Every structure is written in C-alpha cells, then in structure tokens.
Amino acid sequence: MIRPAALALITAFVAQAALAPKPIHAQPARSSDASSSLSSNKLSRTDTNALKDMAQANINEVAAGKVALQNAQSPQVKRFAQMMIDDHTTGLKEVQQVAETKGVKLPDGPDVIHKTESKAMSSLHGAEFDRQYMKKAGVSDHRKVHDQLEKISKNAKDSDVKNLAEKMLPVVDGHLQHAQSMSRDGGSAKP
Image (tube, rainbow, N blue to C red; front, side):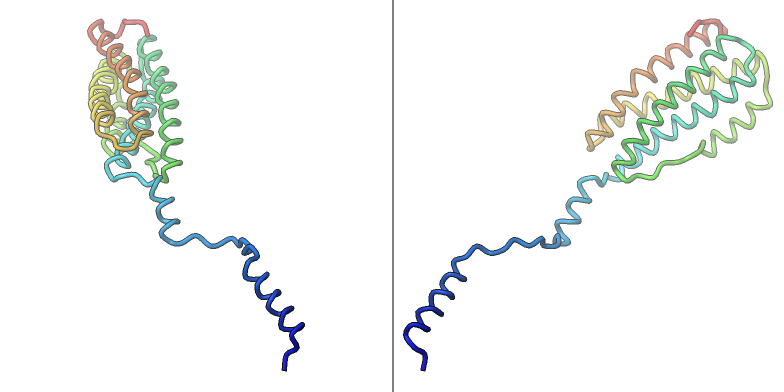
C-alpha cells in the first residue's frame, strides 16, 4: 500500500510534469512545405523559355560581333560590333543571374541558325561584310529581339523575368535605331 505522503509526492510530480512547458525540437519539414518553397522559384514554361530566348539573343549578338571585329572594313561597323559585344555580354550576365536564382539552364553557344550564318559571314570581308552584318545582325536580329522583349514584358508572369525584359528593351531599341541609321547611311553613322 502506498503511504499518503508518497502518494502526495507522486501526484505533485505528475502534475508538475503535465504542466511543464514542452521542449521544442526541430522537426523535419513536411514534404508539402519543402515542395512549396521550391515551387516559389519555379517558373512557368513560358517564363523559362523567355529566359532562354533572352540568353540566346545575347549569345548570338556577341558571337556575330566577334566575327565583325575581324571581318569588317568600316571603323564605324567595328565600333558597332564592339558595342554589341559589350552590351550583350552585360545583358547575358543579367539573364544568367536571374536564371540561376530560378534554376533555369541556359544555352551556352549560338543557335544552329546563327552558327550557319556566322560560317557564311566569315567568308565575307570588307564592304560586303559590313552591309550584310548591319542588315542581318544589326537590323533584322534586333527587330526580332525587340518584338520578343515586348512580348515577354507584357506576358511574363514572373516579376524578375518581366523586369529583365523591360530593362533590356531600351538597349535593344537603341541598337536597332543605330543599326537602321548606319544602314541608311551606308555604314557611316557614328556609334
């Protein structure tokens, strides 16, 4: 038989244990919590493709600019090519930063069309190269990229992708206007 003093002691101990605050232990995240935090950085297919397209456009312009530095005759075309290399290298770095935070793998070289064009352009030199480079890389490609950036800036769901397109649009517009001016002036407009 339990003595009354022992019973009182046991009751007090149990009551104290029941009222004591529970120790806090780190609990592993539930799988739904883990997946929801990952999905906050996950982009829609459209926004993922937009990042890839912006990267590809920058890569293509840098590659074309490098060919132009070697094959162009006009100092103005060479300055334009250097501006393309500088500005589009900066643009590519910005796309890469956003892509890294979003977990998007980007292309790492010119696309097939631009590789083929680059090979054909590499065989040209002097004034003929200057005309073709300004027509294709200067005007045509920048028109396409301008339209692409406008579409992305209007339709992107992710604010980082949208902001990036909006930031790049004036730069591409400036390149396009400059290239159009140079093409009208026969490659003599100053960058």
